Image: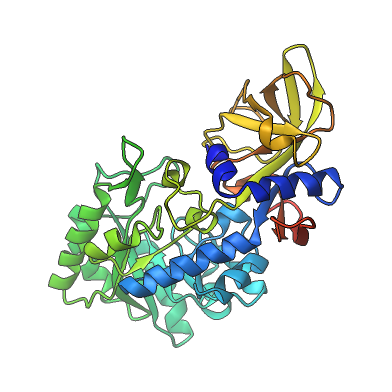
Length: 387
């Protein structure tokens, strides 16, 4: 999906990853991340957010959710994280990263609220239901605390990805608020929904989903109930390009994830965006038959939209040798990838892919590298089997 754009905008990363693999410094089944470009992207996002008065929470699940990269992001201008689940928050907190939002997709379990409040200390908690709100409130009251919360809101016909259902139905929100506003351990300050943006049919811009209208309607309901809405969170494809779009709708918070590595869907089609593609997947040819070459895997993702890959035994050849991805079977474990066999392929050749990632659901390693455009790229941090 991002192979062409990475060749155009960050060929040095492809060359550096190949060199480090051929030298035995990074193994196959490793995501290689250009840390210099990642820092550039974070600074651009931070600058755009400040210019438009938007607050950002960074997300690390796509890039291995580690405290190492969390600290790098915070040092470059985005001060707090959004954790997809409590486990991500725990990993980030080990390195003293700051948690902005927890519960965004996965709600903490009923016995975990005390740890959320005392150990993770998020700025806000996203809630999906009155029942979870009551659990959190009880834990907070026990500790003598009041926790700020935002409500995930949905309409029956809103865009919701499979496996991510949940939230306060807009038609029942007023009734739910009658209960929520009586809970002494929480303070309702805003709303969220996901996803709010998607790439359009022409592949040249983002478009809003119906979820943005749900957010607008929910805000009106909260304000009628006397809630001072200070937090309107609209995640999905938060980037330098979309930040002004979000601001026009009264959004106060965004959650960049793929834009940190220059890999939102729009980045595959437009090379004028500020964020630079900064991640590739490194494999090698394990064995071949007459038609196919099989690559060491473990890091593929069912929604990656892979089409092609580069192959070669050195950093000069690889940028000129391409083949197509074949035999993709997301129903099965990705022990091997499958490529069309080409003349000149050899067992042990490096293979470079560039596709949409979710490292935390894979069995892949993560290598953070610097100086990709130099003769001596440097591995600065290796994360074995990305969380």
